[in-house]
Image 1 (tube, helix red, strand yellow):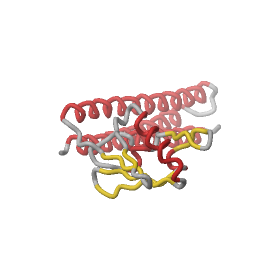
Image 2: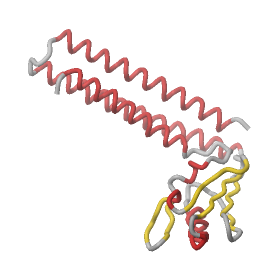
Image 3: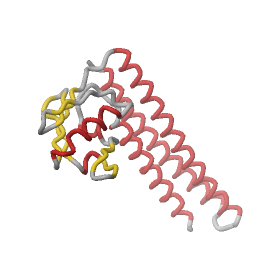
Amino acid sequence: MNSQQVVDQAKAKFTQAQSHFLEELKKLRTGRAHPSMLDGVMIEAYGTEMPLIQVGTVSTPEPQLLQITPFDPNNLQAISTAIRNTQNLGMNPMDDGRVVRVPIPPLNEERRHDFVKLLGTRVEDCMVSLRNIRHDAIRDIDQAKKAKLIGEDDAKRLEKQIDDAMSQAKKEVEVQAKTKEQEITTL
């Protein structure tokens, strides 16, 4: 692996860590209904567990309401049960024989505070991931330097490129976290 590939690989991993962080952010409630809130829900259907998206469509007809329309009406009860039993959601679905409606209760101050703390945990996990990626890339550069594959100047230049990419990734994560925190705390 040449030296520039180490930098490119680190940048790709930074991007991957950021997209994982964004997926985690989508799962945090903000008080408004969003179809991605139910992404992690698994439904017991046709003798196997399937993601909700494979057994029905999720829409938001109102800001405080999710509506799931199953492809097969026989799965209505299974969808309701799976949503009710998903611990971290705390939602109480209702089905009317055709669709499942999930009212999203407004967040109280305590729940908002809990979600902000959870957001902080997610941010820290992402930062640790970014630091580990940086550490691995710099270690690869050091090994190449010791093996005399690259010179001292090239090693410093590559480390600077990795540090710049890391700084950019950290800034983007912080901006996204700040935006999400505002969404959570805004009534």
